[in-house]
Image 1 (cartoon, one colour):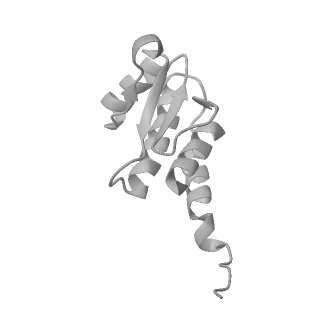
Image 2 (cartoon, one colour):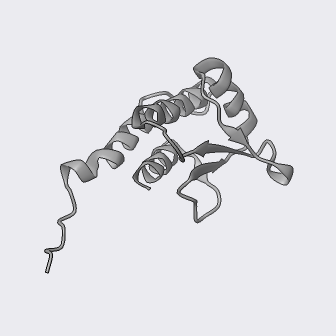
Image 3 (tube, one colour):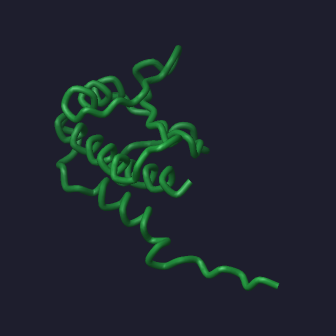
Length: 120
């Protein structure tokens, strides 16, 4: 759940929008007019495979898997690669926002852990 939340925050910080409004924890889905172009760049330029949409969502969304044995550093690379793809498409300047926001959100619970309730 923490990795999914950090991924969503990172992608929203670079101007992308989650789909649907209430996202699943197992997958981050992004609704974007350039979904196909982003997916193509992720695969060819950065070695990142993400799923596309099906049926009426084909070419309109891309999906980033959160399930299984996905290491945190791999997810940081994915959000970084998405930001690089947006830069290649001329949509934003690359400044490392996605990886910074991911790391801040993901690791903040280690720095400021939620106090545990005392056992009775």
